[in-house]
Length: 158
Image 1 (cartoon, rainbow, N blue to C red):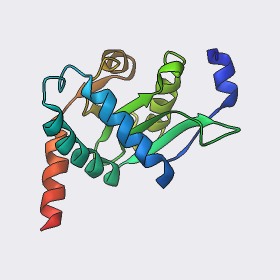
Image 2 (image 1 turned 90 degrees about the vertical axis):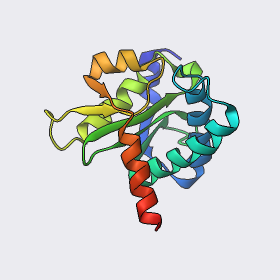
Image 3 (image 1 turned 45 degrees about the vertical axis):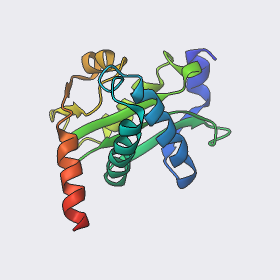
């Protein structure tokens, strides 16, 4: 599917409960391939990253890029926060649809939701595609923001 053809059939929509298992599995599987966590033993990675993703999704916006005629046919998704600081947590695009502008379209939609165009954007996960996104969207990498999310979730549990 060429890029101009994809633009004709792609829409974005909010996440629904039927999408969550795909989001979890694609996030877990793809991030495990990143250089930052590749050496982490699988049991440790899966137990901890699953909790982190649950906390992130509970406080974030998730949008789905999908087929306009079949919204269940997902091309990719993005997870981000608007407040307190615009934060990109993760963007995922299925392999056959990469390099077609889907990640950029999702990020542009996330940027359009920002409260201030001049406010910085941070990213909490670094993957192969991060370098391109960082340059194109003027992001800073801040994995330590995850500590704040996790600490806040633990405090709220007590």
